[in-house]
Every structure is written in C-alpha cells, then in structure tokens.
Length: 85
Length: 185
Image (cartoon, chains in turn brown, blue):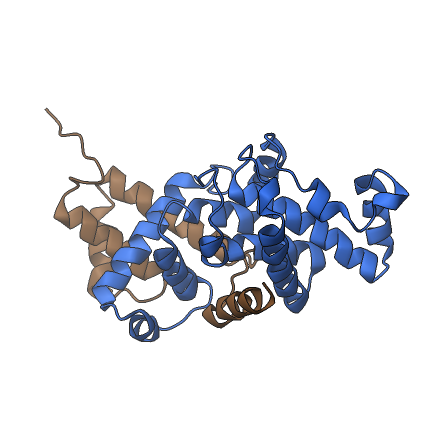
C-alpha cells in the first residue's frame, strides 16, 4: 500500500530536494545539488510538481510587477506616523 | 486572514508592502506612494472610531488609501483626478471632508478580491500574509531586492540553513496560494 505524504511527514530526502530546487531559483545550487534534483524528479511526482511551480514563481517575479519596500522605507514610514500622530 | 479588529501597532509592518503595490500602480511614483501610505495610516488612526468590523482591517485601509490617491490627483489637478472625483464625491460641498465622516467599512469585499486576482503585487502580498511578517520580509529581500544570503543572515541574526528554511516556507506558501492563472506552464 502506498503511503500518503503530507507536508509534515515527507521524506527527508524530498525535503532536501525542495531546498535544492529553491537554491536553483537563486542560482545558488551546487553542481551536485542540481544533479540530485534532476535525477530525483525523474521518478518523484511530488518533487517534480514543486520544482515546476517553483520555476513558474521565479518567472513571475521577473515580470517586475511586484514592488517591495526596503527596511529603511518601513522605518521611515513608522517614524513619520509616530511623529505626526 | 486578518482579524476584524483594528490593531494599529502592527499596520506598518503588516500592510505597507500591500498598500505600496496598490499605490505604485496608480501614482507611478515611489516617493508619492510612500507619502500616501503614511497619510493613510495617519488618517486611519484619526478615524478609527468609524471602523465597525464589517470588513477586514486591510480592506478598510485600502479604502482610505484609495481616497488619498484621489486627493493626490485633485491636488495636482490632473484630468484623471477630476474624472475620479466626479465619480467618488456625491456632491460639491462634500469634497475634501469625506474622511472623518464617511470612511465607514463595507462588508462587500468582492471588489478588492477581484483586484487581487488581476494585480500581481497584491496577489503575492495577499499570499505572504500566510507566513509571519519577518519571514515575508526575508523572502522579499532575498527574492526581489536580491540581497546576499550573508547580508540577510547578518541583519536578522539567522544561519544560512534557517534562511533557506524560511525561503522554502514562503515559496511553498506562494506555490499553494497563488491563483492557478498566475502559475500556468
């Protein structure tokens, strides 16, 4: 009988593969991590699905339609609100 | 999801990036967008008695920001501002004093939900609410602002393995939460 995996009990190896997939998105995966990832997703559907979604996420972040404030900006807003209130 | 109570001490950390994404696409100027956000919080503090809990805290702040954006266009007297003011104000003598008297919260959130589904920045920020604010901030710094792993670890006093754990949590949350229309092959 096949085991049903949830986020809490996924095998340690799959957790590592998830991290390799994340590092790959930032260009920080080593050669061996990339290789292990590629080999693993040949037979693991769960990790393959996560890796595909992860790449799609990276693609949408490249669209530059998402803006973020720097920590400095957040502090400036806090200061302004506290001073003027 | 947000509580339907006001908690002003958390506003700046919790909603600034959401409001910034809302404002920047409408005013196209970072400095103006940041000023409008500060003004929104101040106006929210001033009129917090009007919040009845019919909408979420964030929806209510977006409504205030929306009016601040209209005020901004009125001030610079642009055609866009004039057009929006005509739609938004019910009569001439109500112009300018809408805030303290009229910023009640509405129970209908569908309009905001529709916007979230069409604006990428809002959709991402909405999903990032599922993780805590510190983790969301680390994710933004690493992914969008492209800070070095080491720099982020120094700022937040965490180890690289902690950082990757946080990045994984954020990306997993986004992968699960983002509408499927954003994540098409």
